Figure 1: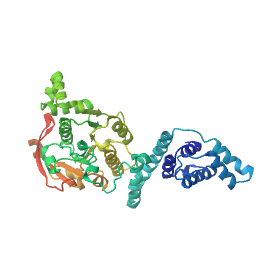
Figure 2: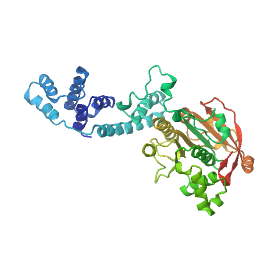
Figure 3: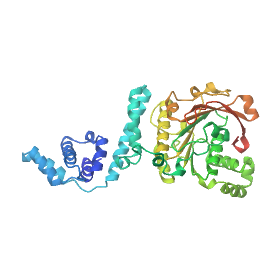
Figure 4: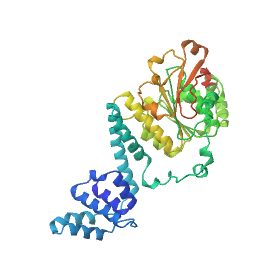
Length: 397
């Protein structure tokens, strides 16, 4: 990015200068441009009411510092070239560049096990992704009352999470901004659980963004329709018109299905879709298939989990991620957080709720599974409970 554009943005707007200071743009400027930058900052510090700088005053101050004509000439040229620019676009470009750099630094810190560095970088990463000075006052409350905090009743109410036993275990549902992580061994029933949840959300007239990067979209959508219709999947495929009538009558119109074309989808791509579609709930099936910085599995997992939690808070959505259980969970009914595949502490730290879905081989033959609330910040209930699963209907109950 050209240095003159950065300085032009700072000169055009006090808020832009504040944001660029947060981005530490002095690191991107040459010696002469840095001196101009310092004078711009001095201008705003001196005049607390100024919303933009006056070039004539800027030039006078620079001439006072560099009275020799050949020294001052380069500063005069820089200030003269300051022009009107699109401040939001300039800030967005800088933010994206800083976000990419910080993401790489976070991945390296996670890989090297530098926990102090990770703790320092995570708030920086979140701040860069969530925006700038324009929203600095939106989520700040001074001595808030209940009425201050619950402005939008619909968004303050809990979202019911199906099956019913899970909803009871969570204390009556989950809030927007909560992150639920559900994991299991292959074939145990992760997707059936996710589709049961999705149907429950759709019944509540909520918009559900379903990121499907594990199975072909036609298979997942047919399974969801089977769950909605409470019919075997073969019936759904044999009766497409009747299936659609039933599905749309039961909330199917709130589904936004996204199948990434490549790389399992990225956080940036997910964010763009959340910004456009404004879902109430986001289901990521599966987390491990998404792309993220980091060479090792646990670094990628932790980066993704951190990012998805942040997106849920930013866009006021309940987020649900699906993941794998490690080989030690094979033929196990009750799982714990140590069974999460590819993560040491990252996912465990970023989720409000972690649900392990387990079953022995005999239980799977009988269509049974056990949900274990390994982590439950919503109610504190960690008691495992048994459920039944109808694979033909992708129904967990």
